[in-house]
Length: 132
Image (cartoon, rainbow, N blue to C red):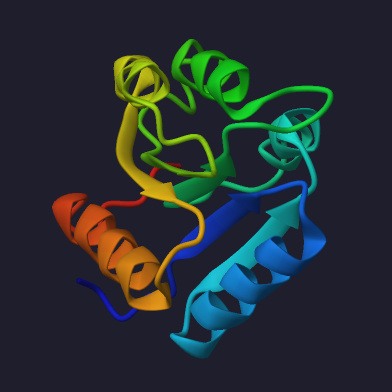
């Protein structure tokens, strides 16, 4: 992985969860931007190109599955990997998440090490390649 800081967008409607994950990632030297729902996340992509997106599945306005479908339908953003962070752990939702393009599924309550480990794996799979 290169020495260049990796950009991560966190889309989560629960402020305490979003801020906790953001603090964790900043502490591990990632550049983090936060969004409060899927629509806010799509707006953030207008001027921010993350190397990874962590998105909650259940949110008001635009949920994580719909956000990810929109992300994967746009040529300029379809290559950005997604990790779902959610309280929904039923198999149907997990399969739907993988089908729309999620790399990993992290269920709440989660272990900080689990989130960090999945972030590192996804970024290493990308080989430090940044989309422009």
